[in-house]
Length: 550
Image 1: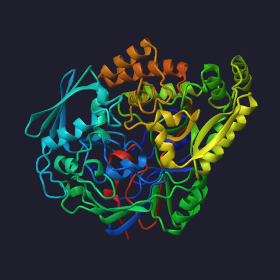
Image 2: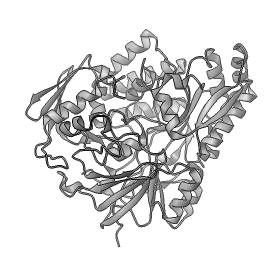
Image 3: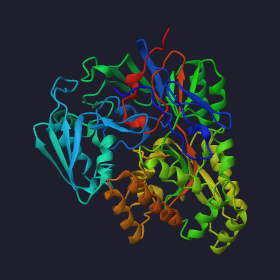
Image 4: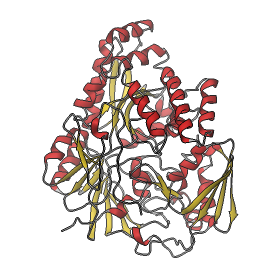
C-alpha cells in the first residue's frame, strides 16, 4: 500500500497552493487565502456504509472499454484491479502486475501476481489479462484511438506473463497500463454477460477490494467490501460505499453540509467558501492534471482561426479563477503542461516552462486591443456560435456567461446551451450530435497520467475521441511527438515535450482557461483519501476510507 505521507514539491505558478506540503494532513495557505491540504489523516477505525457523490452523474455501463469519464473510473477502480495504479504523488505503482520490464525498444513485459482470485473464487490467469487488454485495442473501445492503435500485438508470454509490442518506441503505452485501459475482468463472466456486462442487471466480475453490490438506475450504486482481497494491507475498513448521482451544485452542497452525503471529489467550486467554514467536515485542496477549457466541437463555426485566438486573448483568466472558482484555481494558457508536480528529472523543466507561460499575452490579463484586431480579420459569424455547458452547475453558468460577455466585447456572438451530463457525454461518441453545436466548455479536461504526452495523444492526434474538431497536426509536429514518446530519459523527454507544446500552442486546437487543483470534501466522520488527480480514477482510494482517530 502507498504510504499516506507524501511531499508535494512547488512548481513556479501563479497559484501558491502548490507550495510544499509536508507530512500527513499537512497544509499551506495560498496568497488568495485558500487553505491547501493534500492528504486527510489516516483512517484508524472501521465503518459501515459511506455515502459518496459523483458530481458528473451516473456512470455509463461499467465496462472498462467504455469508461472514459470520471464517474465511471472513480467507481470501477475500487472494484476492478489494474496492472498498475497512479498514487497520490503521481507516481506509477504496482497493481496486478508485480513488475514490468522493457527488454527491447518495442516490447513491454508484465509479470502477473500469482494467487489472485475473482470474487466468484476463480483464479485470475494470464488469459484473463490477455482477454481484457485485447478488448481495449478493438475499434469498439474508447482507448482504441489513439492508444490501442499504438500497439501491434499483445501475447501471453508465460503462465503469468503478458508481452505488449508497440508499433514504434513508445513510453505512453506503458504509462497507460496505470489507467483504466489495463482493468482486468473475468473472461468467462464477461463473455457470458455480453452487452449486459457492466449494467445494473449484468453486473461486474473483477478481483478488486470492493464487489459489485446493487445499482438502482437514476439513484445510486453500492459496492461491498471484499474481505478476501489479495492485498491484505488494502482490505477496506468500510463495509460498503454508496455512490449518489447528484449533479446540481446547490443540492450537492446542501447534502454535504447536512451529512446526507459524506464525501465527494470535485465539490462545487461555487461552494468553496461555505465548505471551508463548516464544522460538518473539511475541504481538502491538492494537485491534479485538471483544467477548464473551451473547445470547438466542429471546425465549421471556427473555420477562421483568428476567431479562436481572439477569444483566447479576450478572456480574463484571472477573473475567472477568482469569481467562478472562488479563488481555488489559477490562470492557465497551455492545456498540456499543467503547473503540477512531475516526477523526478522532469520537474524543473516543466516548472521553468510554466513560469515562461505566465508572461504570455492573455495569461494574467486580457489583451483586448489585439483580440479586436484578430476578430476583425475574420468574417462575422452568420449566427451566434453555440457553447455547450453542463446543466445545473453554478460554476459552468458563471464561466459561460463570462465568455459570452467577453466574446461580445470583441464582436464574436456566442450563446450558451446547457446540456444534462448524459447528453454532454454523448457529444464525444457521436460526430452527428456534435454538428448541432460549435463548442463545449469543459470543467474537467485532464490526463490519465502525469505526462503531457498522454494528454497530447488524446486531444491533439487525429481521430482521438476528444479531438472533436478533427484537428490534424502538421507532419513536423507529429514527428516531434514520435521523438518525444520514444525517449526513455525523462529529462530529455521533458525538453522535447516543452518544444512540442510550444508548437501546439501556436496551432491552438482549444483554449485553455484555468488550472484546477483537486478538491475533496470529507465529513468529519470519515477520513483517509488524498486530494489528488488522476489518483481518484486510477487508484482504489476507497480502501483508505475509515473512521478518524478517537
